[in-house]
Every structure is written in structure tokens, then in C-alpha cells.
Image (tube, rainbow over all chains, first blue to last red; front, side, top):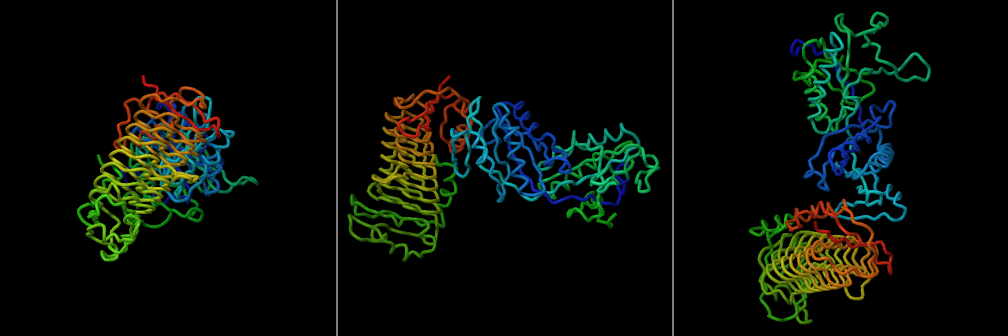
Length: 302
Length: 286
């Protein structure tokens, strides 16, 4: 399969079932809403080394937020529902509550809920109070600039994390440029995040390593500087740089659309092949076959 | 103006509705606590006509007092001179009632869910001790809207009451969790002995508001009220939580003053003779 002269490899991306929560962070201005959102989603590139995957899902106009102020939607992904409680407690408490003028609301409609405001309220030292507006319980925690307002609980749902595609290019400039274009397009799609810096991952990983205690290592099959030293290299001769786009989404449909849009955008001059990372299909339940996503029937696993 | 919540109710007026037209006796004191959508939903017309009521303290049926059309619906329209018909929607849990004209006392008292829309005034104790649901009154309300029955310990607990006219004394007294918005003026002792909840007054708020208030919020969007001496000025802030409330009221079609959503409020905390964690927020107009 070819798109704009770029080969789409007949393989699949292996993704995982995760839990997701969406928060709406508001503040007095766009700037402070984004500041709080960025702080809350910091150091959350991958559950391999962080407590969660997290990223910014989109910006909301004042009329789209519960309190009529500028807002930012952020998504958090964890491996279990129990982990989500710890993640949100830490990140809402340490990064959003501490940010000037911020407030934090549930941005998802799902049945499974985790209590966050209802636990953070104890920071109010007895001076916290709650408000019940129809079905929404808000906690008001007194802070030095007024009050931090936060929902009693946040909903979460099963989601998809770790979907990906690889951009194999002739050189660094072509790889980065194609990846940047893909990221720009994917960011328009609601319900997905790209958790790595700038949406791009340059150090994909493989499961297992030669060193004891190291359960993951650099994806040697796609590292150009060692292509002659590893038997499993998957790099064509004319490929000298690879970038990976990792997609987490609220559901398979959103992830599939992000992959389709991203791959289409990445198929441009200097790019040789689009591939995907998988672990033989044994680790993740969700398999995203590139050919199927790009509009032709599945033709078999890699 | 019908609110967003009542739009579906109004549309349902044409079909699939149980319609009750009061036939008298005029001036008699009626207790019609069986006018409840949840009771009508599974009943035939004959069964609805046989539901009990009280007329001047004597046993009667709905069929004795009302011309009734329709059956098996949770959409109800009540018409006629209903000023002496009490307890419409009493303890209802679902569905909707439209009252065309003034209604008697205890309208929607103790209701747990559903909606009541009154095109006129209501007498005392509208929405008393409600535990959920939505009441909108286009006219004035008597005393004790959303409050506790005399001698009872707790008033409204959850639910929303919108009064587009004036309200009498003791609005929301002993209430918690409820939202009561009054577009006109509010009588004395609003929010007295509130445990929690929110009362928003667009007009003048009478004296002794929030007396004995534990954790409730009284918001004055109009004329600055007399602040009881048991309240203390804390600060002038822009309360974020209040924005959520005012935006909800705007969505319901209430005329929240321009600038109030983004505006400053003077915050008084009290009542210090009680728990002291309640508040009166007074809109500090620019």
C-alpha cells in the first residue's frame, strides 16, 4: 500500500486497555488555565516510567465551561481504576489547586467515579464547604487568592492507550517535519492525546533487555546507528531517522481516526515508510492494522 | 416565560396528558395530594377519578372535584380556580405538572423528583421540605417556600425552586442543599436556620436574613440587604462557585444582572450564634 509514494507497511500497532479521565481546568484567563493544565500533565509521557499518560485534549471557550471562564480539557490515562484515584489526587492537588485562580471540573460522562474533591477538601482544615448544584457537588476550599472549586468526584471509563505509528524517513529533517505535521493534524481530533514531548517520541522501546532488572530497552530494530549490529533491524537502506507518534484515546474510534489523519499527514517527501510498533500481539488487546485504518481490508498480521 | 426544564412539559400539553379542570365547590378547602404524575402513570381514567382527596375536611375523590381527561401519563395539566386547592404534586417523584392559574398551599411539598410549572401565584409552603425536582412559579409565592413545616426540624433537602415574583417570609428556612432563586423581593427571615443550600435574591431581601444560618449561602443581587449583627465582613471576592449558579439561572431565563457573573461580591460570614460557616454575598455593583 502506498500513499503519496510512501509505503504503508502491512503491520499493526498494539495498544492497551487503560482507564481515562477528562478534567476541565478553568482560570481567570487562557494563560492561567493553560498553565495549570500544563503543570498537571507534566512528566506524564508513559506509564513505563510515570504514574500516568496525560496530555491536553483541547481548549474551551468560556461559554463551554461550567463557570464561564476560559478552560482547557486534559486527559489522564492509567492502567487501573485504583491508579486513577492516586494520580488525580496528586496532580489536581499539587498542580491545579496550587495554580492561581484555577478551578477543576469533571469533563466526562461515565458511571465509574473516583472521589477527588471529596478528599482534597480536607486541605480546607475545617473551613471547606460544599455546594450542590442540581446533581453536581462542588467543594470550595479556601486558598490565599479566594477559593479553589473542585468537583466532588471525577468519572472515568475504559479507554485505549499506547497506539502508535512510526515514521521512517531519509533524514532527521524529513522525519521531524512529517511528525510535526501529523501532530498538528491529530491535535484537532477530540478525545485523544499525544503524551510525548511535542507529541513525538524519538526513543521507542522494546520489551525485555540484556541487563537484569531492565524490563524495557531502546527499540533496537528501528535505531539507525546500530542497524548493522542487530539482526532484527527493520530499517530499509535509505532510512536514517525514525520518529514515533503515540496516541492515547477515549475510545477506539477516536484513536483510529487520529491514526488515519496522522498517517495521511506524515506521508510526504523524504518519508520512506510508515510502520508500527507491536509486541507480537501478545501484550495489548487492541490491534490497529495500518492497512485497515488507511482504507483497505486487513491483510494479515505482521 | 417557560424555563428550559419546562419546555418538554409544555409541549406535552397537546397529547399524552392527564388534564384536570377544577369544578368546585368554589371556595372550599381542598387537599388534593393525589394529583401526582407518579400515581397517574399506571392508572386508567376511572382509577384516577377514584383517587382520594379532601373537601372541607370530608372524604372525596378527584372525580368529585375535577373534570378529568386522559389517563396513564406522567404529564399532568391542572386548570381552574385552584387558590384553595392544596398539596398539588405533594411528594411526587417523577413527571411534570403544569398548573394554569394560582395554586394553594404546599404545592410540591416533599417532592422527590419531576417538575412543576405554575402559571400564577402560589400560597404558603410551596416546595416545603422538597428532596429533589424542580418547581417554577411565574407569580408570587407565600411564606415558607422551600422551608420546613412548622415544628419540623429540616426544610428542603435538594431540588430547585424558581420564583419569578415576590416571596414571603422564611424562604428556605431550615433548608439544606436546595437552590432557591427569587426574582422579586424576599420577605423576612430568608434562610433562617439554614443548614446549607443557596438562596439567590434578585430584589430586596428582608430583615433578619440568615439568622441561625449554619453553612448556607444567601446571595443578594439587587438592593443591599441589612446584614444581621451576627455576621462579619470577610472580604470582597469573585466567587467561582457562584458563577456556576448564575450561569445556570441565566440558562433558565432569569435576568441575572449584567456583570454579576464576573462581578465582585462582599462576603459576610455568620451566623456566629450558630455554626458561623454560612455567608451572605452582596453584589458590589460597579
